[in-house]
Amino acid sequence: MDQFFAAVEQRDRPELRGRPVAVGYDGERGVVSTASYEARKFGVHSAQSMMVAKRLCPELVIVPSHFDKYKEVSRQIRDIFLDYTDVIEPLSLDEAFLDVTRPKTYSVLNPQTSEGLAVDIAREIKRRIWQETSLTASAGVSYCKFLAKVASDYRKPDGLCTIHPDRALDFIARMKIEQFWLVGRKTASRMHQMGIHNGLQLRQYSLQFLTEKFGKAGRMFYDFSRGIDNRPVVTDYVRKSVGCERTFEKDLSAHSKVIIELYHVVLELLGRLEKANFQGHTLTLKVKFHDFTQITRSHTVDYLLQSKDQILPLAKMLLKDVDYRRRPIRLMGLTVSKPDGDDENADPEREYARLEWVEPWLEFADWSDPKTEKWPE
Image 1 (cartoon, helix red, strand yellow):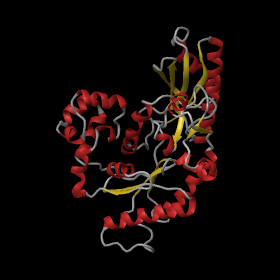
Image 2 (tube, rainbow, N blue to C red):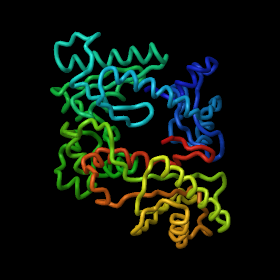
Image 3 (cartoon, helix red, strand yellow):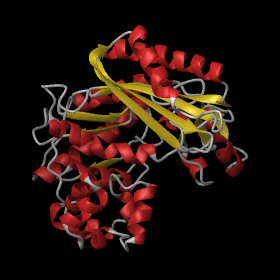
Image 4 (cartoon, rainbow, N blue to C red):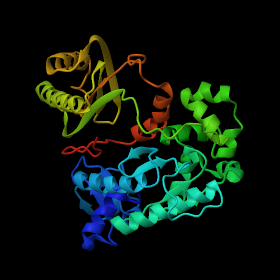
């Protein structure tokens, strides 16, 4: 979807149409969740500090998030997808992969080739989304997930782009390195220092070299630069962790205040564990300091973490060696997870499929607003 949260707000509030809009918490620690295209012209973008956004665009209209409304629209869009295929892999409220190799309906289609079929389905889905929600969507069509994702971003807003297998390598060769999955700001900087600025230059490096430099991500870089992505569209995942975090209105350095906030994070975590029906053996504490540096501390136990009496003492133990008196705490989070191999039903390929989404998100600033989570479960 295009500028999804902002587009929903502009749809429902006509006075916002054509104006620069940012969705998120309007406060000192607020972060932009989504920016309208009018706001993006001023340099406003998601994950940006709201204070910075207001400096860049003095006329910016800030709208609080309405996640229940976004979820409802997301369900409408998913219902449209289901008319064409059951093989749907959601990435977020406003983005998903669809495998239309064997579509459920041909009622509006008259394809001559499988490529034509996919393009026709994409065009029809875009039309229906506009007709039923008054929102625009962009679609990418290709033979693998990597290129379909790239294509979906290529002609936004309201775009439709197809990358044919015969033209894929030439297309990838011209791609900026920042457009590759797993390449966040820090990774892009490292690659630039190595003289890698586009897909063609990335393709010159061996698998051994890339894995030595970038670990598991190196295999993805090697494959993607050659147009290789054999991951299927996966309709369900084995959950490996549940967590939550809070960004505070004011940095915390007093022991009593830190313990109180830790207690609240534990309670929120327990609620999420119950909602997800999840249990694990490992607790991880994440602390981000006032200067945006951060640390994590983990501990694994031989019992399932499922109650306050189990998690709170463990969280206090992890916090004990954190020096927050000299470095006040900006953000604190807790996660319960299953160690590798803890779940005998876990599918390594499914876990690998989620890998590419980790680093780009983590490289941004706080993903939680002081008063409300930006991204719901």
